[in-house]
Image (tube, rainbow, N blue to C red; front, side):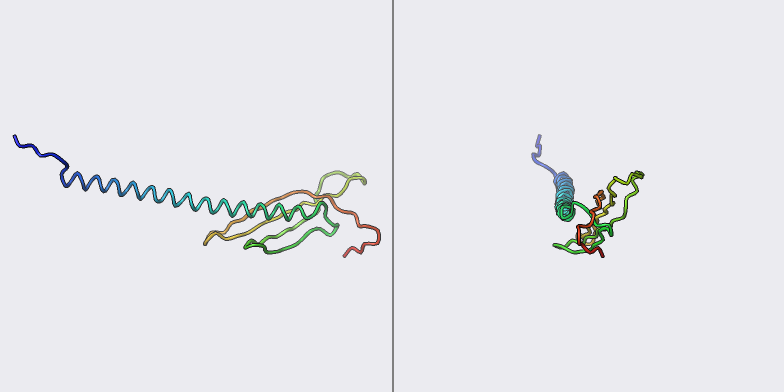
Length: 131
């Protein structure tokens, strides 16, 4: 009996097709992970920028804090409004709701980070001119 050893051509083609599909899937997964890392880095940088902007002030003037800017490829916007706390006490310090937004683009996809916090209203210093 003459028996052949090895693989047939059909078996080799099926094995190569399976290997090609597996490599294609691995390539897509690795590419997606790399994109996700890039998005995470930009989000982290936006959070650092927002934190540094918020750390500039410990209080807000009675006129509020409304400002726009750009830094290191990020655009940012700060808007404030008087917060309604429900306290009618004359000793209560008025609070301002601060909304800080940081915008960026990752290729063609826009990104945005929004933060909201409260800051107390700063009373004018003696002799200070309030606009």
